[in-house]
Amino acid sequence: MRKKSSVPYIRIVMLGSGNVATQLAIALRQNGFHISQVYSPNAKHAQALAKTVKASPVSALGKIEKTADAYILAVKDDAIAPLAKKLKLKDKLVIHTSGTAALSILSPASSNTGVLYPLQTISKERILIWRKIPICVEASGKPAKALLDKIARRISDRVVSLGTEERRVLHLAAVFACNFSNHMYSIAARLLKKQDLSFSLLIPLIQETAEKAGALGPDLSQTGPAARRDEKTIKKHLKMLSSDKNYRQLYLSISKSIREK
Amino acid sequence: MRKKSSVPYIRIVMLGSGNVATQLAIALRQNGFHISQVYSPNAKHAQALAKTVKASPVSALGKIEKTADAYILAVKDDAIAPLAKKLKLKDKLVIHTSGTAALSILSPASSNTGVLYPLQTISKERILIWRKIPICVEASGKPAKALLDKIARRISDRVVSLGTEERRVLHLAAVFACNFSNHMYSIAARLLKKQDLSFSLLIPLIQETAEKAGALGPDLSQTGPAARRDEKTIKKHLKMLSSDKNYRQLYLSISKSIREK
Image: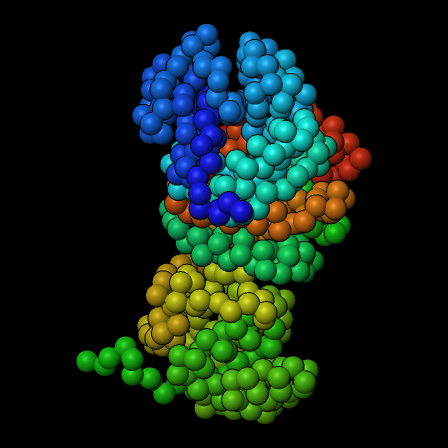
């Protein structure tokens, strides 16, 4: 009966002030949620994000309100468990945003827990199109699931229910697809810099590579010396990398992996 | 005096029928050049591309016309030298499209030679936006340079004059930025497949990673367990990869390289 455009009045406390906390709080606020408080042990950080999303800044755990609908722990993986142990929120929905942490890590804080893992590389500087970001959700039970889905579906068109193990594999895959491919760009940038060549020359190539993998799939998209078994070019490249053992070794092992496919 | 939109009447013979030959012939034809012949030892391949660009197919070297303005050898690196030795074109402009082959490899064919290296991953299936593709040019002398520039500038807004050594470094950088990052996508796809998870989940992440590297540069864009020295997650990931020594080794060495930055 309710139209999608009607705004549910849901109060959320955001714990954290880093990249994910910032971008998620903004997305929630833009989609009509009420961020009542932003918590960070660093008062300045709490203030900065609180101002952006019209919330109250809190830097003492004791001052966190007990009556919000949901509490999102968007903090580093190692900080989730210690923080959860200090929160006593009975049956309020407590959420973390990690790709690897178990759901049960939140149990000390509440009987209703959930995971809301946005599958994206998130920095404060970038404007994100949240509607297209896959959000992986996992919940401790039906009441938690209902509210978690309501939150996730309001900011993204692609909400996927995944168990902890599946989410961990997805996170590992994302490390290869995002962090490791970005490191390949970094190596390329450094090789170019030595010759005073601009990294911007590679941008159309990098973007086409990403789009092509999306359209054809990465296996069909594979090109280059290793894929066509062009040993002559591979030898030349290894010689060019002889002054840099680290890159030479990576070139060798990635080329080997491509050939073995 | 001449407006950019006026079409110079330039006759080009395309030697080759693969990905680069096909896409380049189409781009040239679309920009008003006349492709007089398409040569391939495989008559069917010659016919297919010739039909697309309204040229005559040729599968015997002896039938290649001697009076075109330019001859483009868009063939595999190993095939350039043998082909150049069989062509006797006096002072006609003879061009190759390789990232690594020297310019001098074309000397047996003509006294006027050039390189036209498009910095892009090229497959027949994709529509390319040639205007944005950097084209690296190198020429044997002024007359060659003049015609080569005329051809390159007509299809791209980004024509860069590079010597052989610089072009080779650019090609090596492109192997990292394109071929190796695509292999990272492939590994991610295989990890997901084992869990029946769709590769499409990663597409927004892959595209944002590419765009972010273009906007912020790859060093500032680097995120993930290795960048934040999250040894606990790295250990978990290595354990998850224990059944796949190859991927485990790549994970280790790329993470090490990220940390050493």
